[in-house]
Length: 527
Image (cartoon, rainbow, N blue to C red):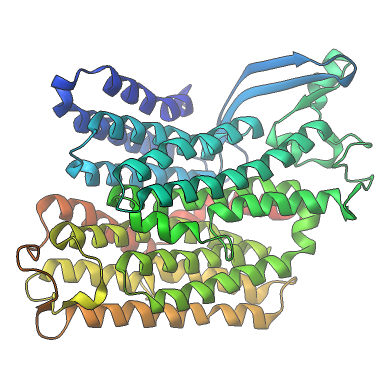
């Protein structure tokens, strides 16, 4: 394996961000090219990692570790914080998704024509912070990247968004900040409870660690600690481990988002510029699902097993609630945003099932939704760029002047509603299969989740019928209604995503062979 490949993959976008900041304004025509170059480099490196990734093991790969912070706390022992990164079958599919979506977002950003230096440097900064979440194996390092995502996204929405961008960006920031505080509380509790057994034996002192690998082994917990597996500590009458699990779940559920913690998402999507909506729906929501699989479930399997029904119920509520809200929307972006709430509910249902089918399906669904949501928001952006209007009722008969756009939209809609042959079908199928086969969930709960597929067919087909068929009619001033078909750049954005969802739908084992061994290792904790 190539040494320091993950570090290069993680930090090279920062080089691009610094280069953009240092370039004088007279060279601003280079900002977009620099941003695109570093996003292409991410794709290249991710493909190189793919060629070297071993699918026959659940162990972490490409692991890099270096001492970072070591503090002696006297009688309390020593705290050790490491620069520790690595990937496995759960994180690597999301790393591949990140490199693809960030590249698509970079090309979609070609129309940005104000404050280019700030925009493109923030974009590359966001790239590093998102990537760091999927690579970090030290909880402290993960939290830094998780928290750092807030800043570039806040400014990208607040400075380049729509008329209510300040409201949307502040709402996004506050919601996510609350989730971060809840995660921080649990992180501190775990730090007080977990020790590094090797360093402690070597130094003959207690060496506390944030290493996620040690946090999943009950033998590394101090017997008298707040989150010990043996000594029960009650906080407000609730066992501490159960409370810690719920704090983590809420923190990550805000990011997913899960009903009733979802209200920031429609506002953020409606006001965000198209490339930011692509990144927000395509990648940022997946950090929440990844956090459950990487941190909450393996560290607190007892709580995850006990509350499986409640978690699955929240997932099913999100599926149905998001579907009905999408059906009621007239704003195209809001309809897509609520469809995201519905589709991410399948992720929670699959994870809560504690079955190989369900968890593998959840990982697959996150990747599939990342591709499809990016495609859907690009479609909304194409229409908005021409007419500056997103209301579904203002369009009829678009198939006439925009035939290529209609074909691509049809592919995106049918793939998103779960048509066989596309990735959306496979993700939803396996999460539901996991729900039906689960030993911890009632069959009726998984059956209720199938209503989401019916609702998706309703709102996507109704939107397609209203906007694209019939006699051409556009309720927009003539000077704004320039209904030209897809440009070459827009085709380069949308066609690769359409091919990706088709290829993953026809050959799902491309992803399943990456995640299968790691998911099997995760589920052994629950045996």
